[in-house]
Structure formats: C-alpha cells, structure tokens
Length: 77
Image (cartoon, rainbow, N blue to C red; front, side, top):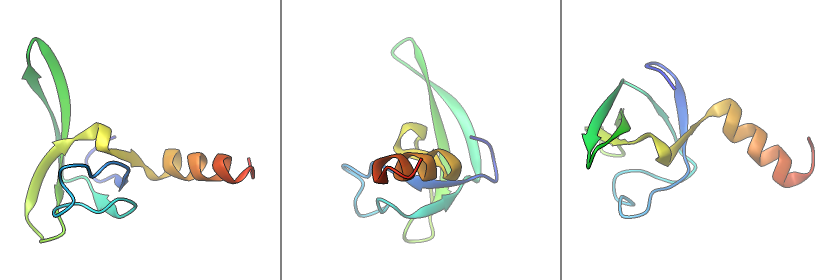
C-alpha cells in the first residue's frame, strides 16, 4: 500500500459510522506508529463524512488483492 492507492474496506468493526465495508477509499498518507513495542501501519483516508481519518492498514486491501480474493470465493480463479 502506498499514497494514492485505492483500497477497499474489509473491516469496519467499531468504526461503522466512519468507514463502510466494501467501499473504496484513496490513501492520502501512510505511516508507522509505535505501539507497545511494535510499529503498526496506519493509512490516512477521507472517511464517510469527508474528514481525514488515520486507521490501521489491516482494515483495508488494495484493489487487486481484494478482487483476487472475491474471484477465489466464487471459484473463478
């Protein structure tokens, strides 16, 4: 994932108001935040209200990965 990539939300738990599962978002920025001795990757997107929001990158997949997963689920690939 990098700035400018389009990602799809795969996990909106505890953030349902701000992001929608299955919706596409553009990565505005990306960074690492130290947390309990581990660095976690966050991305910045515009949420459903048009506000910048930093969220864990694990809540999203880039379009090619998401598409491949969906095709596999359908047995097409």
